[in-house]
Amino acid sequence: MRVAFDSRPAANGGGVGRYARCLLEALEAAAPEDGELVLTHRPRRVDVLHAPCLDCAPLRPHGPTVVTVHDLHHHKRRGERLRAGVRFRLRSLAAQRATRVIVPTQAVAADTTAYLRLPDDQVVVIPEAVAPVLRPRSAEMVMRTRRHYGIPEDYLLWVGRMEHPEPRKRIAELAQAPRSLPLVLVGATSRWAEELPGVTLTGHVPDDDLAALYTGARALVFPSDDEGFGLPAIEALACGTPVVASDVPALREVLDGRATFVPVGDVSGLVAAAERAARPAPPPPAWTWTDAAHATWAVYREALAAASRSRVRPPREPAVSEA
Image (cartoon, rainbow, N blue to C red; front, side):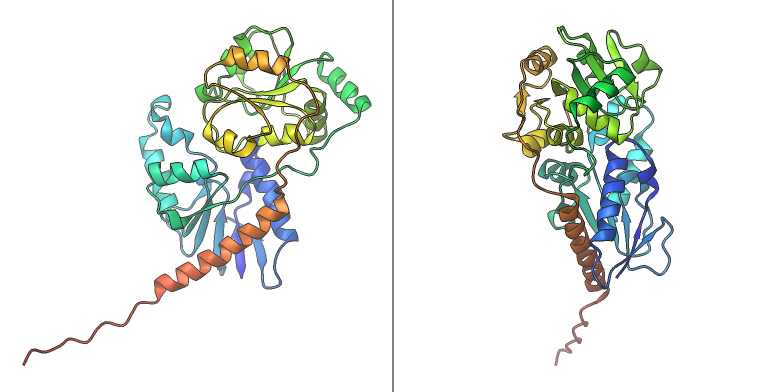
């Protein structure tokens, strides 16, 4: 079975880039004897194509196609994006034409059936996992990393991308919420983020530094009112850091019993709960990228078999002549 994997998203930051890099590495390590992975978005002579995000899903697939849908917040909030109607229709059509769609949670699975109108048997839930590099770091490394970025000893942490303002992430509300601890925002920024009051911006940081910043934080704050999985939350847990999050379906599904939840929109309450957080934090879910890779190879086989079945047409019943 020859699988083409569109590796272009692996060069990006954020959760989609992390997903593509970690899954690709695990897929290569877990490949079955008859499995071969080809890194291309222009497949030739392959059995299955995997597009690891909806943006790179082919509109006119030439064979069995697997598409990963991380979340559908753009579809659920179309009013926040002007002139996006055609783009959303094309995205929806690409997902509908896929042989199988992978999603990270049951919450996103429900969204795909509601917003993309996909049948249940076309959607497969495969959770994400923590990158092995994100693990607790020593007190000395935490101190060096804090000093490098000008961060005090005790702080609250938020991790994500800030190139564009996304109302669902509630970053501006988080920055303005009353607090007694400094707030550190980690991730790629832009001018609007640089104008947020009273916060420390680190920009994009290497994984070793990210692990140290997770390790040193009082808590990770996650005020989003919509998420598909919440990868920074399980990364923080893997580094021993408590998580305080808004009570949204995907985060409850992934973190139930592992985080403190506050009602959606109560950003002040979320910050207050984070300032009261204490170690030890619960461990992250036991699911690994190796588990995800094995499950994904199974989806490739399923997609190939489904495409083969669709090509087999039942014989036409002979016409019966009436006497």
